[in-house]
Image 1 (cartoon, rainbow, N blue to C red):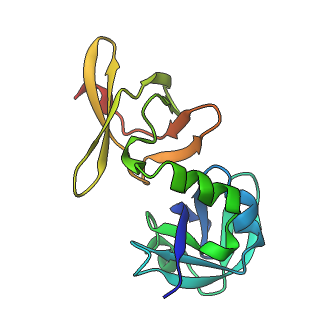
Image 2 (cartoon, helix red, strand yellow):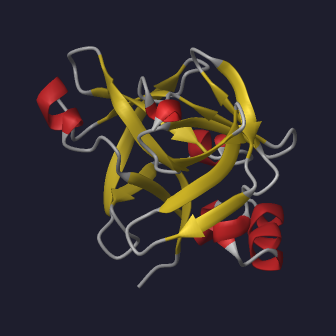
Length: 173
């Protein structure tokens, strides 16, 4: 079995012709643009190859040969995107191997919401079997925010920022 590396996720559908908007992990952009196939699924073992027909815009709008409608594309929303390990820049793989504790990779990152702006710094990441939760302090209160692909719109590892589109009211829970 081929070794696959997680490089992003499917955020949402775009238009009516089966296009999707991707969230691409920092540093993997050139690798995705050069790929002929992206592997998409809930895990590396379940990922299936999709032929990349085109990629456009700064918003990572992708069109795949296999997707012809918005309904077909909607089934992939929230799925993880993988590339073959031999298609990924070696520097990125070396950094991932040097920092194997993925659950703590966002500690110290700022969360910036699309509507609210900067919220707070992630103090801790709590790992549950289903998901990871960011623990932070917002307006003097402890807040827990799920770190799932549906809410994360982008990550800047250089500036230590997690960009999110948080549901209304989540900071008041």
